[in-house]
Length: 39
Image (cartoon, rainbow, N blue to C red):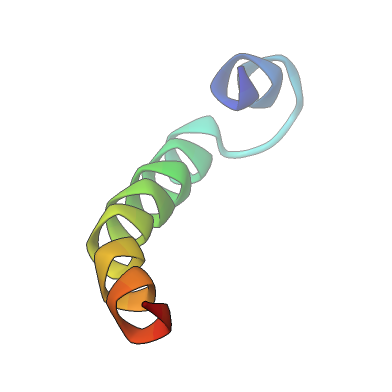
């Protein structure tokens, strides 16, 4: 959804796509660590 909105706006859509992808990968990597620390 955010990629579609970024494509419609006068911004750097490929850069935003890379940022969203990086955030998703980092979240997937850090969530098990955060859960292990809390539990």
